[in-house]
Structure formats: C-alpha cells, structure tokens
Length: 259
Image (tube, helix red, strand yellow):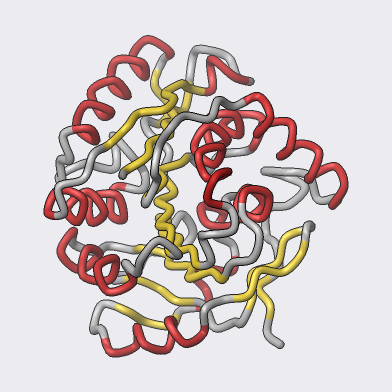
C-alpha cells in the first residue's frame, strides 16, 4: 500500500508516538468544550508549541461527535509548490507517528471528473498544512477516512464546487487549515487578525494571503457557508507572541466553527 509518510514530525510536532499522544491529549484537555454542532472547523497549522492550543480549541468541539464523524474533508494551502487548482495525493493512507489514516479512495476517484482537480503527489509530499491536523483528528475521532486536498491558486467558485460535492451528511466533517497574519509586530497582528476575524464572521469570500495563508480554501468554504445560511463561531484568536514566541515578529492563529 502506498502511504504518505510524515514530513514535519520531529519539527512541527513530536515524532515519538507516546510523546505525541501525550502532547495532543494535554492540549485537548486544556481546551473548553462548547455546545456547538460543527460541520466545519477552521484551525491553524503551525508548530504545536505555537498554535497547538488554538487548534485544540477547535478539535475539542468534536468530542460529542467522535463516533458520528466517519469522513473528514481536509483542505489546506500549498507552501511548497505553486500550481493552479486543487491537488489530490497518489496514496491510500496518510501516516503519523500515531498510526495510518486511510483515505476515502472512492470519494477521491469521484473527484477526477472535475477540471480543477489533479493528482499531484509533489504538492502533498512536504506540505505541513494538512499533516499537522492529522494527529488532532486521530485524537478527536474514532474511525474515519480522510480526503486530503492541497489547494493551489483556485477561485472561491472552484473550491466551493468541490466542497459542495463532498458535503455529505452528519458523518462528514470539513476542516480548513489556515494561519492568519504573518510576520507583523504583536500589535499590528492583533489589529489585522481582529479585522480578518470580522471578515470571516461576515463570510467574506475575498480574504487575501496577507490576512490568511489559507485564503484560497477559506474563501471557497465561506462562499458555501454563506449560501447555506450557516453561522461562524469564533473560538480563539491569538498569535505566536501569546504562546511561544517573541512579540517583534509574530504569526496569527484563529480557530472557528461553522455550523
């Protein structure tokens, strides 16, 4: 079986199974569960010491649904490769130190009919935006299959079309992986991320890379949410100056539920 191996374990998160499970469990135990019905999570993808607590505030909301959710559509931006459209991997599972996550091969094959979809293993091989979500998903859910999509230069319409196609029912969760502002001062980042959060809450489909590095998948998701009359709930907005970095040059993180 062709399995996509971890690319950033030992860097973004621990590469030892027991330690990784402990870190994720501790992050989750410190998060607060709210009475929400998440169809969509928007969560950050930096190293766990920087954004893990913010991501955990999103994944914590899945606890009542851990047996119900059996399929996860995971969309994130491409940091390693410039391309147009949306990339599928050429593999049957995503591996983490905790274990292998099987892909939903039938759903992946059904996506090949769309012109914006291509199989591009190079887009997945070193990409961290999807990988860092996987240990959280393994902690928060019981048995599930994954549909991992790296989004390149793609319009909100083309992303929305794929999300709509994969929407499913209560068994399907959609996860959008995105950080917020990059490399501003602490105060600048707080201001910009506050404005970005307002735009997300208002379901703007015109976010830029300066607001959110995952703007391409995020804009598509917000277009779907707007059309479906959904609600955005902000869970946590902080930056690396609040967690594990200095305040001269920070990266912003936000966690949101769409229900």
